Length: 299
Image (cartoon, rainbow, N blue to C red; front, top):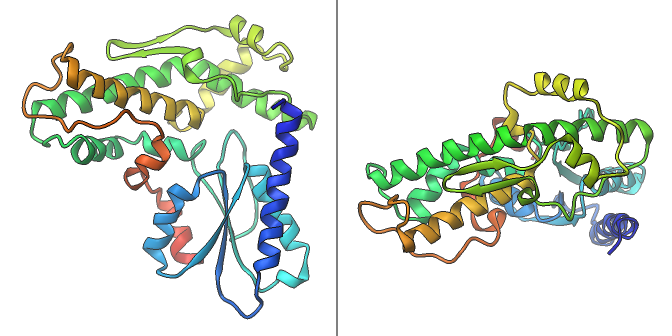
């Protein structure tokens, strides 16, 4: 599917979600209607259930633009003035300022960033890999995660800043020109238990995205200074998910080969390779305080 076709398909999914809502809406019902990007309900669903023990209807939209399109269509129709509707979107690289208590925007790039929290990874190691918290194996794995994830974030900083700047330039131009669908993190870094190796520079980025806006080194340095307090929050979520999947699968492979002597005491639970971080580990992901506040106050 080409880029233009993907945009059209995304808009169709947004309209389809609105049509599904409009045909199922009942003025007399107090049913919650929640709109998500893609498969993000896998993350939000358990958290909504933990706050409100009542049924809700979920609608999947292709992305943020489509979720906000549905919001616009609902808000413009007086028929739905009593509807209990809520919209959940990623921050991406936006400064999203929507004065609407029914819209929740993540404090980080996207859902996947919440899975790379240390305490989330700790739970996965203890519960999914069946490690003991006082074991040297757990210490080795958790320490290795901290080390490798920091290396990964540092390696991705330049490209993260470039993407953030480009996103802002796209919005100013009113035209989206960048398609990242065919570019995973492996195109920019090599990840192994030995470390994370950066394998790109600004010139390589220009070659990969020849139609992109021009971005100067000074602009990248200024963006680095802006995001230096918590750079891991701004790494593209899909890249973070790829890092986590690679990290856990390397541990799974190591549990059989014992090349790095990580699992020195006790047995690690044998499990299949990780296929989807979002669906397999949703119960372990971090829940930001702002999400707890949103759910308790508005839903």
